[in-house]
Image 1: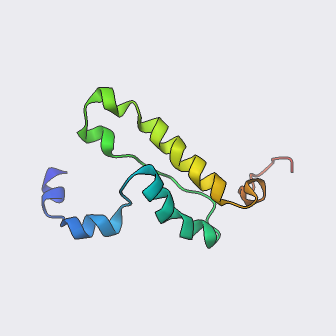
Image 2: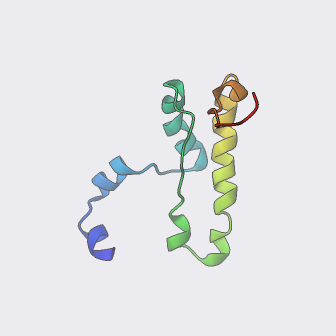
Length: 88
């Protein structure tokens, strides 16, 4: 993994991954919501490189992004993906 990272330029990494504060990441995702995307699978890589005491905030960061994005959806219930067998 270190070899791969060593061969990856910062510019390439910035094109492949979202980065910034929770508000900045949410802003980067909003255009996808505007185009109809209703599912994101976010991964916070920060815990890999910071102290374990600070890493526990990972869930807080993910929830904050979710709160910001949910507020951006005009009708969050209508935007939820259908689940097979779920009652409407």
